[in-house]
Amino acid sequence: MTTIMTTRRAVLAGMGGLGALALAGRIARAAAPSAVNVGFFTETKPTMIAKGEGWFDDAVKAKITWTEMGSGAEINTAITAGSCDIGLATGSVATAAAIAQGLPLQLIGMVDNIGPGEELVVRASAGLKTPADFKGKKLATPFGSTSHFRLLGFLKTNDLTQRDVTVLDMKPAAIDAAWSRGEIDGAYVWSPAKAKLLASGGELYKTWDVLEKAGYVIADLIVVRTGFVQSYPDAVSAFLGAYGKALDMYRQKPDEAAAIVAKQAGVSASVAAADLKEYDFISLKDQLTPRWLGAPGQPGKFAETLKSTADFLVAQKSIKSAPALDAFQKATRTEFLAKASA
Amino acid sequence: MSKAALPDWAITLLAALLVLALWVGVTSGGLVRDLFLPGPLDVWSGLQDLLDEGYKGRSLFEHIGMSLMRVLAGFLTGALAGTALGLAMGYLRPVDALASPFIEFLRPLPQLAYLVLLIVWLGIDESSKITMLFLAALPVSAIAARDGVRNVVPERVRAAQALGASPWQVFRYVIAPGALPEILTGARLAAGIVYGTLIAAEIIAGSSGIGWMILDAGRFLRSDYVFAGILIIGIAGFGIDRLLLWLERRVVHWAGK
Image (cartoon, rainbow over all chains, first blue to last red; front, side, top):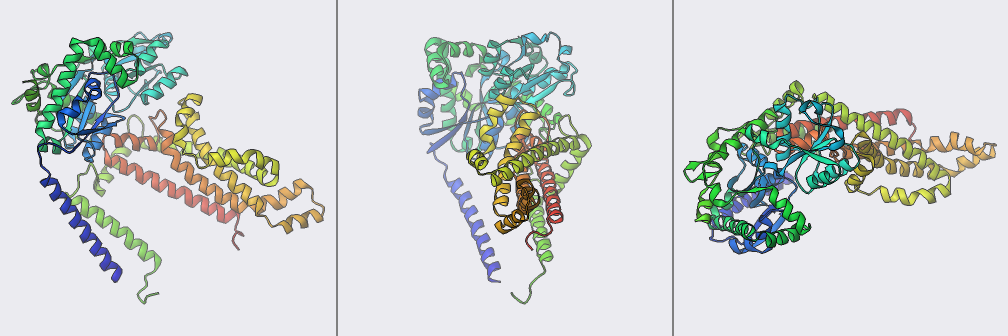
């Protein structure tokens, strides 16, 4: 009997603790956050300039804790768990899944339209010239990524199934290793793995332009935890502003920018300069046009991309269901972009 | 003992019902989202979905079959090689001196630590996955067999020798049966470790296997599939363990008596 009493007391105490936590969360609404957690990827993009030069820290007026993430899905999970406030340059596929699932995050800006930045690389000696040549071949890609989405789009638009082509789930480093052993015939991936494959017997099999026209647009985005957006709107605008500044610097002094990016990403300056040219970085002003995110009250076309991406994920059974277009429009908050670019 | 002691099976049943009731209570009230904790009905419909349509290009049974094949191959090769090595280590001191540093080093090593090496050395096909499971089973079996041999009562060995048994006969009729209970206990331990390593092994270039399915479904929080997969993997693991326990009791019915 006594044990039951103790347990009940413990449960009650636990519930009281939860309530206190919720209350504390409500009280902590201040102008500036005391600490900001940013999930990021080490990559060769202007975001690395703002990170390396400390512009992001200055913008949010707090010490940023940077956590390297393995995938956009990991950023989704970390934001949902409350241990990540901002996801920097997360993929559009992960973001579409997050919005469709009603995870507590909002899309506040873009970094780039991936375009040819992620592409199918095939072994030159394998003689893959037409889609039909891919039958019986092995292709690798990190599952759940924007590259995976494009590869599945490539198969679908060419009436190939995953029975015709073996699609393997591999991280970029594993792709590199499997390629050097001659075990895969191709991979849909991004640099540096893509560049390494191309340098060791690979050639591009161009898919991006056709796929982009067919609606398989992929992009890298900036997402923020909903609670953070509500509590610190000024920090959100300032964060975007810091990225805008970095992008301007890249446009004006590309060599100097490439040197900073190279140091942050741990690659040579020439590699960084070449990688930077692969992405179509979109200025904050352009993001506000109807072609991309749109302006406050006037949702842009990108919400449709997110919606069609989510529908594709439903067909793939990666997520259960996808809401209507307006859910994607509502989760896209462009007022911070407007403020940052004003 | 208190006067109202319940029989063990009733306590087990009550605990199971309590967990189920809590599960239903927490999930049906809308207290948590199905993304984080799917209700029993969600899991059930997820399981039916998997049974009807499979998961990403393969039927559910294909995934289960691939996983069991890997577990079986890794376990059998690892336990057999480990037992043979362990018997030799227990019987012949020089073999023990030679092999034990490697075995002792390998045993506590997390398999994920050498995952990338296995890919680089053996590639992405079944061989690297099965080798990983083999390496998980080997040291446990070897140590169990070695200790089994060491624990054989020395008087029995001496009695056999006094009766004129050759070293091989001593090994065959005294040492090996004497070590058998520990070997089988080691095999059960090894099966558990192999099973636990399965998900790590299926990280390697996956697109099949129940472990891979759980990982892939978890990426975008398809929690119904994750739960269904965990149920399958849990029940199969329990089944394997019971099977080995039954085998152990049948083969070494004298152990512990």
